Amino acid sequence: MIRGAVFDVDGVLVDSPHEAAWRGALAGFADPAGFTAAFYQAEVAGRPRADGARATLAALAPPADEARVARYSAAKQARIEALIAEGRFAAFPDAMRFATRLNAAGLRLALASSSRNAAAMIDRLTDAAGRPLSRLFHADLSGIELAHGKPDPEIFLRAAAALGLAPAECLVVEDAPAGIRAARAGGMAALGVARRQDGVSLADAGADLVLASLDDLDLTVLPLGQLRAIPSPGVTPDEL
Image (cartoon, rainbow, N blue to C red; front, side):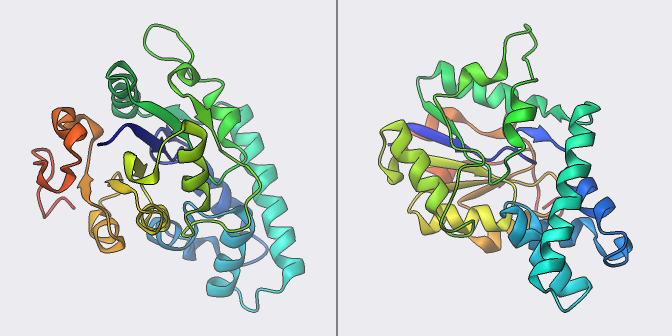
């Protein structure tokens, strides 16, 4: 039985400026042109800030010594704070509808982003009726101190506990391979959202189902946990 859902924020609920912040802050450390969308999804998305900085510098500007990692992390944080202050983000309409449908169906919902900037965006977002988006969620684990970041399942396991649910009762909604691997490692169902035509990488990471839009999920099968049997009419293999 699926009784709860755990949402990543960046790329799932919010079209955030994280990728732009990482790329913009890279000037002075490495050529920002090397920080492609595919690189961001594969190496940075869903991971704690220091891990993302370390992976970026190791790949694009080795060696990734800890002093440079700290400077790059700080530069990225300053840039994203400025972008958030400018309002350079928006909720994905399909995600807002999906969270609203799950809430109305009686599922318990949690936010679980590795980013400490998630709350600054969620707190400023409202639905079509002007109500706070945050009202839909029963727990918020975003930005908490973790012993291990994704793909370790710690944040998702703690989200399930905060909801009072067993991991097997939870569906994780993610857009990054690291998040999908974390969900599977925690014994949770994993729904991949392929907003960047990256469905293959999400499927390879272990997603039970990959959709281009959350509007495509048939909620009537969720109580049975039959994610693998859900058709995805809005997605074809070519689109993934």
